[in-house]
Length: 77
Picture (cartoon, rainbow, N blue to C red):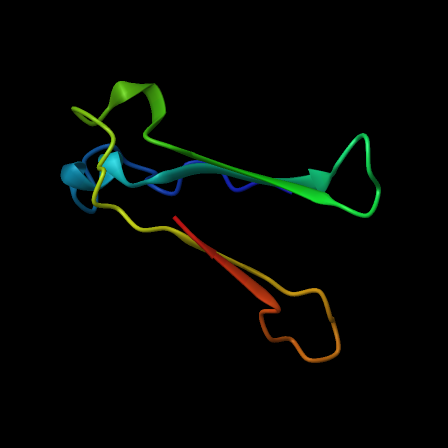
């Protein structure tokens, strides 16, 4: 699974948003342990922003029970 480059136009909606734009969210089974998952979040593509925004906060919610459709875990960084 992946999510690529939410900011479709480098000038829209706000060029300053490039510093916090999610360019990729990848989730896959750990190659050495099938009971574990790996999540990778990539931001700030191609150096469009002057720098990564250290004040940015990202949250990834993971649902492990399809019946409830509620996040079982939340990762904030």
